[in-house]
Image (cartoon, rainbow, N blue to C red; front, side):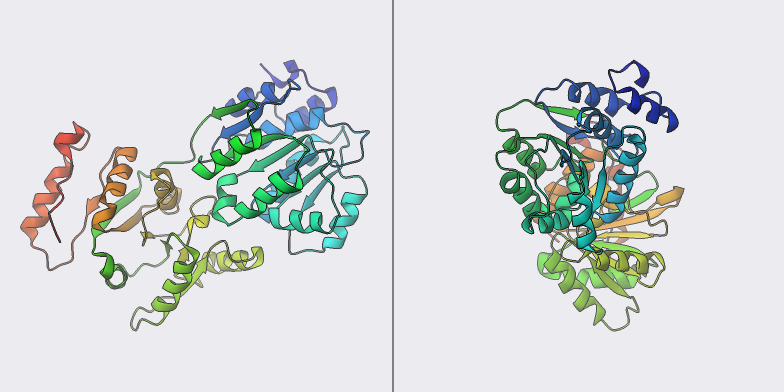
Length: 410
């Protein structure tokens, strides 16, 4: 079906024609009809960037909001100011003829201006969680008429530390309002599913899994070192000295370790590398400054939590280091290493794995259906290296027969 055949307001159809959009994408075909039924179905949608998911929720929201009611009827939560502007732009174009008042709300700019815009009759609010909470606590916004609440790129919001803010907005600020929840994400983390099930409270929750995020890693060479936990740091320093990365991202699992690792590595003599961190404790302005410095090659190594695993377009990354293997599952690993080998360039990913993490490594290999080659330092014998490498040739055969050998001890 074309959009002209959908049961949509004629003003929305005209706007879609002006935008050159005539045929819905898969996520739009599966989500929009469920949201046009006027019921209370909540949506848990998994779709990668570039599949048209913004219009998947913007079209039904715009179609069902009343232009006559001058109050907030839809809230869209996004993780960053950049995404806030993108979503705002889509709603603005879609409302070209319908004339619904849309307001973008994020930190780093005057909150008074945003208060005035909301008070003047905002009907759709696109917001980052922190600034929206600030406005709510100042009694500058009311949710009493909200029919829809959207969590866009909710996985990134969790990575950036917005979970407490999201829980407060959904379960405290919107208590008793009962809007429809539309939750879209590239990956479905356990915390995201838990939020959706808690909020739906027994009502219909429909999962739509169109496609996973970009999991292409063909151009990335993947390796791992098997290490002892107490030698993780010293081994990693040796790896950095050996690799001499021109531009790398070092992934860790906690913000505390990101800061600690930066401090220790910056004090290492002879590395001649410039470090900075990116994690959820940094403000939006600080994150933008760090990313700009990294793109401009003023930083050699970016030490980051999973906040950097998705959505970053940095073409010159040569190395990805997993100082910590991800605890959230194989998909996060693939998102991490996807930050290199961009634009058909070849990249390199190196992970550290202790004995108790070998199960995680095997799960990653099974998920990708390809092996991760083990590396040794030069003091290991060539014959031992060769004996291990022979196991990679038959990986795609029976897993039990082709499983990579694990020595009893290091």
